[in-house]
Length: 417
Image (cartoon, rainbow, N blue to C red):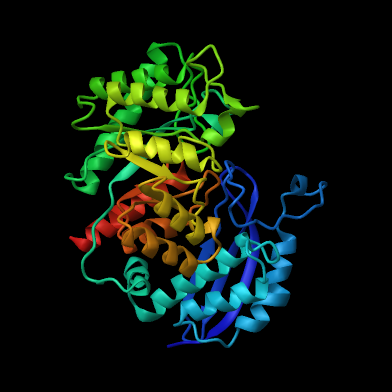
């Protein structure tokens, strides 16, 4: 066991060129943990709050000097000297120091940076891999691990690509039966073949925030068709070798009291949108659909889960926001059957683990996810393995901040073998 000796926090840039926080924690035994907080752009109103500066003349108000000051003056003086081995105790201290339900005092970008860095330092202190330490915190068996199948976002839309398409993510998912390294090969081959296919259709191969291509296409169905063409050209079969998933991010499709998408010339009701998903599923047999309806439409979520939940994963991201109370409500209402887990949505590592435990108890499928504004920190890869996630969603197999996670999974796969 080792106590916290030093806490350093600084402002760095994320993959979108916005400031974020990197925390460096040194323990008394010289173990050092470094963690940088990711940031989303497609945000739920139920997420924990990032603390940003209000000085528009510096980083357009996106700076994090205020959050760094909170760390220096509020968090560090209290945590230095605390025993790092009990992360639950550390995170509870951080929560009490913040004193709000959504981390709006200190900021989730600050609280997660400290919590994550301490977790990394403690794993180093124990001389065990981070994924094993995460499993230890979960109370899981720490000698049985597997790599969750990755979900590759190969076409970006919505807020990740300036609304070139309505749906935010078009994903390909190789099967669980394959090794992780085999799945990575398959996805990368499909990704590069997609680039060639887009060029053949005179579409751009510029990429969005998460590394997927961001072509200007006429409709969401066109995106699926062109991915299907690319997968076939790469030598794989849709529905057997490669499965399709969607992240609709439906909260951003709302116009007044209805929905508008490029595929339909008229406004749609929630029922119409569900019927559209049913039609897509009949053609492509989707593995999952994330945020098919807005984050407040519990009745709509119940309907889509009732109609499609037996055939695919109905995944709550904005709906649940890695929040235990919202997850419990979704479970009680049968308003989803799967959940996206993003640590920065709640603000500490152990609060995130508590949400994972609830999901596992309810037999919800768990997708460990990155954010659109990422850093080269590969914490989420170890986290996905440590919690025994069913899937891992880190973006396309491109851009350094995404590849860092996929390469870390390769490293873990080698360690496990």
